Amino acid sequence: MLWRSLICWIGGIGFIGLALLLLPSLRVGGVQLFHMESSDKSEKILPRINQIANGIIIAYIGLTLACMLSYFAAGMTLFDAINHAMSTIATAGFSTHDASFGYFSDKPAILIVSTIFMLLSALPFVLYVKLVLPGQSKRSIDPQVIVFLNIVFFFSFALAVWLRSQDHLTFHWAFLDVIFHFVSIISTTGYSAENYQLWGPFAFGVFFIVSFTGGCAGSTSGGIKINRLIILWRIAQTNMAKLLSPNAVVKVRYDHSNISNDIAQSVLLFVCLYMFCLLIGTTLLLTTGLDFTSAFTGVLTALSNIGPGFGEIIGPSGNFMTINDNALWILSFLMLAGRLEIITIFVFFIPTFWRE
Image 1 (cartoon, rainbow, N blue to C red):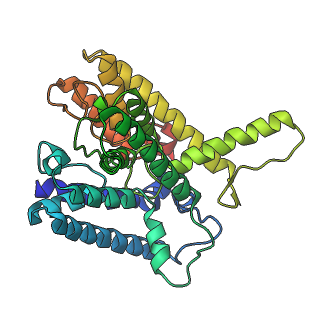
Image 2 (image 1 turned 180 degrees about the vertical axis):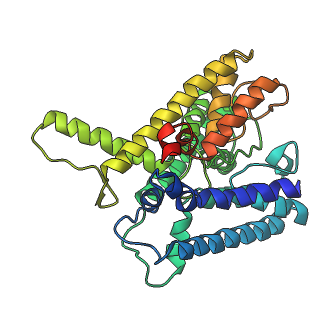
Image 3 (image 1 turned 180 degrees about the horizontal axis):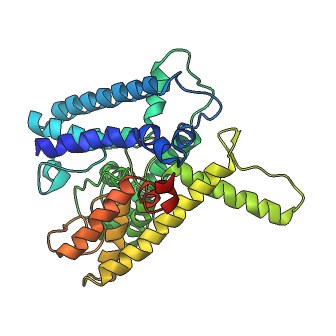
């Protein structure tokens, strides 16, 4: 279990560095994408890429140590604290217990610690570099951070009110249950302390939608990412404005800067490929004998790297043990594609890439 947690932890930092190291060599906008993800397009956060990487590594290790000590202080054993800290910061979601965080349901402090660090891991790690280094730009907070935090707290509050009305819990217990599971899903960590499918249709709908979104770009989270959704919304607004005023010059803007056509096209391409994989993957899983709910949400959770899906088979109270080998191969490929930002995988199938 320790080896598994270590692999997840190393994979988390590798995922953050993907845009810096791998994507430039593949000519799919690596450095440009990184600047978009850090929302700092007009200036370099640090003079050189290796300094950026060093700052992120320090922040990553620092958060891991803080998470481990917090888990231990909250009541975990040292072994559990080490494993869960690495899994939490990497948003991997692996636990040392079959019941996941249901094993710690009698220790609310552990759920609070987990929620805090899952939330921190879903924010851009460049943000922590900028906060601690002197002389760095502090002109504004990344719009995706503001949107992400607003989504988390608004829907957590709304779901807590819903859950309290359904189960007659006190509000603070309902809020703790809700925000833990909401952050677990939107950060694509995948921890669970109970079967949240039993909370009713409103909770099911909210959790299903945020399974697409994921956390912020530049974090260890999977999913489409908040910044892409913001840019997608701005593109839609811009095109609507052009329809209403054909002669108007309207630019797509993000964090006080114009978005280039290359970035706008890469966002549209990613979302299209994500939906394409979702459609094809679901169709393939249906041929293996899975029901539609398990097939669709199985592909969704694989692409977004969440873990649990929905339904009786792969929901928070189920697992993937009963799924046949063909389905597991399909899901494995989709998990790899999702973790590598999808475009990276498809680039290898383009003949011009190999000719160049």
